[in-house]
Length: 494
Image (cartoon, rainbow, N blue to C red; front, side, top):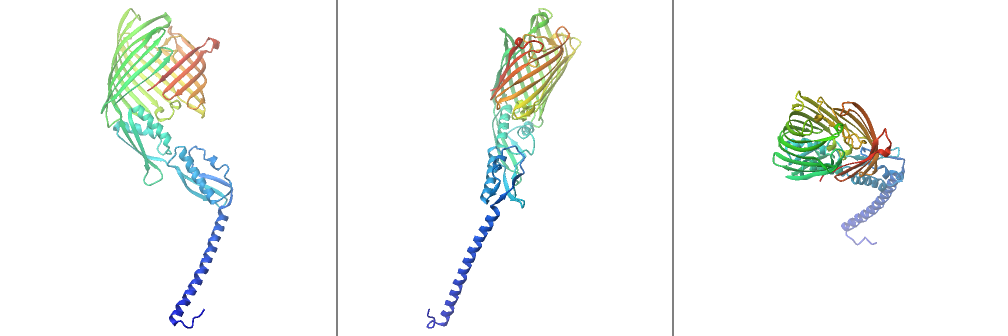
């Protein structure tokens, strides 16, 4: 290349260009070498033998172990990252749509840690309802503060709240809780004015028993109308209509009500082999308190009853009574009512023309569910009744749905003690349950003699949406099973 004929300034510029081109070429080559080296080094780090994989932060019971059971061994970077995506997707498939994998850490001991953030519900607000309802609805939607957010679980609880409180719609929006990975629930309810409810049942005392009601909600009050009948052995053994008007206080959990009940009952008097009729009208006034698992009523009533063929052909009784009714139940806070625990205690007393010296009545019923496996549960239950009155008019039937196996026995008792236990094997998930049961009673019969009876057999329970059907084959365990009978206890709502 010739440079002599060029000016000095041009010679210097050309020299610098040649040096720059040489420098750039050497740096490009060096850069390529570095990139190749980094890729080789990176490959040597991540394409290694993974000895074990552990989850950090997992508390809910989902099948994420299946994702990693065949993933140990030599893994690349993309293999490890895909594990995090798969775990997050598995959480979302199970309804935990706000939970996710936050970090993937490879320890020096060749253990891969998958860190999971399970979003928990740390706050909730409810609009569109009265102050009286807020606390109860909050406890039904989120019974335990800090539980992991699950869209499916909350959806079922929302549907249950809609049915119980007669809402037309409920919308729920999860948002971040104070810029964290946890959840704050914003819930808005819209009230429906009125709806029908009811069902049909078949019991051993009053027979086929359809029932129908209508609940109408006003701004700060409500009207509830309820009716039912019972038909057995060609007789209407129960005809009943109940009307109540509720007045709510927005600033408390207390409601006031007045109402009237009219009924016609045809009762069996087993010891005399006869029947008698009760035609009554009962005005009532009361106070109801509801908070979470507790429902407490205190009410006064004046029951005016015409008794046919009880003491004489026609006898009119005026019964003034005060009653305390305490209920404890977690059924409205559970997804499945059959897993609930329920206790109900009634204490009442008063005076009447039948029992001029006054009387006291107490009753207690309780049941719970003991889940041994996801497909097997035991249901122990107890039922007590006692009255100071010696008049059968105040006694309680013994051979009802709590003591099966004694078909066509209708004895009543002033003092009865009944216990039982059912075993339910889940044959079809959330649909069909079968198993044996046993129930035993110790009571005074209509002749005022202490008796002990034990019955048992097998049951089949079918749950379909709002329909419950229980079919029993039961017999007196001191006799042959061939002497037993079939009982059908059913019910439903719409």
